[in-house]
Amino acid sequence: MPDRRMFWRIMRRLFAAQRGRLLVILLALGAGAALSAALLNLQVDAKSRLVREFRVFGPNVIVAPRGAGGSSAGLSTPGESTLDESVVQQVAQSIPPRVTADSYLYLVAAVSSSASSQPVSAVIAGKRSELIDRSSWRSAIVTPRGIKNRCLVGVKASEQLNLQSADRLMLQAGGREESCVSEIADRRGDAEDSQIVVNLDAAQRLAALPGKISLMQLSVTGKPREIQAYITALAQKIPSADVHGLRQFTDAEAKIYDRISGLLTTTTALVLVLTGLCVMAAMTNVAMERRADVGLMKAIGGATRRVLRLFLAEAALLGLAGGVVGAAAGLMLSISLGKTVFGVAARPRLIVYPVSVALTILVAIVSAYPLRRLASISPASVFRGEA
Image (cartoon, rainbow, N blue to C red):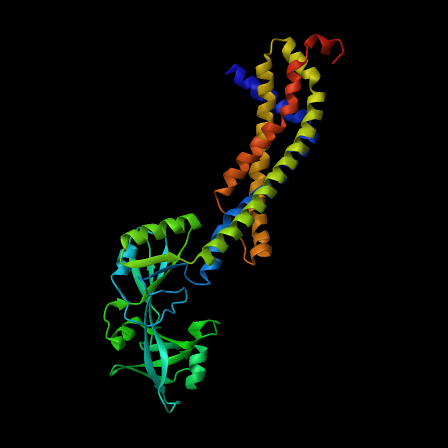
């Protein structure tokens, strides 16, 4: 206990003796912690941002009948190859990450409306969306509330049929008939502009294929390696289906994230190195001014190991104080940087805070290397004025 009280008494005196220089060190550590925390938070947030942005472009995994040649847009030629609708439950039981699954059934039907005099052949896409997680799955059918028989008509299809929103359509195939209320979809620039999307149940009745789907499109989150592992596991679980990913999406996502992550990691390392150099320069001056104090400590029996422990503890406390304040400021700074980089404020990630504080403490301890020069000071040379 006496040693501990003496230790903290000396620590207080050390901080009080050279406030100006220690304040400069504290500011350097705080600035380094703020910049590193902001960059690390952007790096962690970039992954979820990229995943969210790329999912806007559509699915990245396709589950289709073998030999059907399903495509990313769901535009395989309508034919006899189908999958059983129970494949959705098999997907749910494969313990995936959070997955959005769209089930499609395609057929060609004669479409007529009050605005068109003659029926026109069009591709009908029955669709149902499921949200799949580890424990359960639930369906969110595309039909909105209040209109059970809505159909979403592509731009080109609506022009061909001279349709307006809320027009009633009649769909006929093989002597079977379904009706729906039209809603004009936004232009997508792909083949879906020529399709008419209806409820999957209506498409199954129209095609006389109850419980059948043409393919499934999955939006799987995660890193490219995780997505590929999920595709492999799913293909083994459903041998009757062709499970493959859309490499143009997963590869592009991986390349962009790797570049952003590499840039932010390099910048963070550079900031920490510059912070360390600034602290090291200040520590060198501190070591020069403390030669007499170290000589006196060693003259009255202080071990070199204990003397160095004092200064390392001082550096660690400076790193802790600078890291705690600087990392908090850096997380706030990352919000405005996120608006500049991604157009959306970055979310503060709690994992970044302790990591930034730990890095700042490490930089402070490593930058205290000039204090090791004090270990070689001879008390006699100090008292003679030679050191």
